Length: 285
Image 1 (cartoon, rainbow, N blue to C red):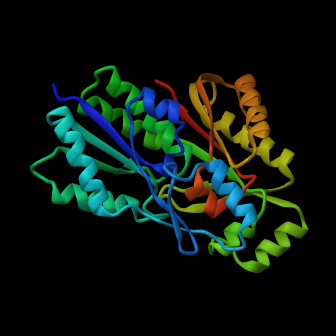
Image 2 (image 1 turned 135 degrees about the horizontal axis):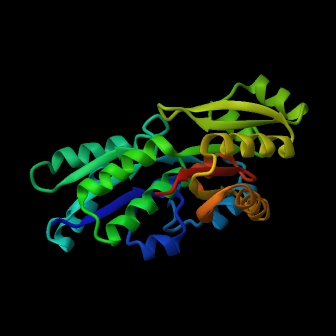
């Protein structure tokens, strides 16, 4: 029985302790401040990134790994494990070319290494919540078929909701128009964002302020999952206190199999800005 090794990218925002515990391979995306380039989570931590963001007038840009980088990762894993099946799970292809780079690399190695590349159609810990579940199964000895079947369930069962503190970053990154950003800020409208079935960002609903926005998200989660046991992940951009409050509230309302709080890393942070909160939920087995 071939073992399974799990690969993802840095936009999954998985805490380092879980990456190490579950032996997950993380391929970093890049963040650019003018001429300076950093690898997400390698030589630029979330804390360092947000410090730079506050100190720098330049809007950062991001870029995906190259197919060659993925090839090197896949070759190294195959060599170290004597031919493990590689399950590579990545940021929504509608948000980045990362999945495409991984897919090209897998095609180059077709016939030599057994690789399945998956478009998560999610972002931040909505990817991580699935990746950690699959990596845990793999660590327990689950085979390729079992891991892929469970991933199929997770892809359909996982929900994510984002709240941004400011509309500035969404506007500058072309997600909303300037007029909408100015009007939303003046009216203190808190857009609740989500990802649709194609992996594109869309406005799930609008609320007047954080309290009403969170109440709407809690209600939607309860409607979707009912009495099911769930895994919950809260990712935040310099909003840890709020993240802790959200976890406590969800644990009061739902049966939680696990809960994780993690920082939104530099790549996702460059597109949503500080103060962002993201709630990811999926069904536990």
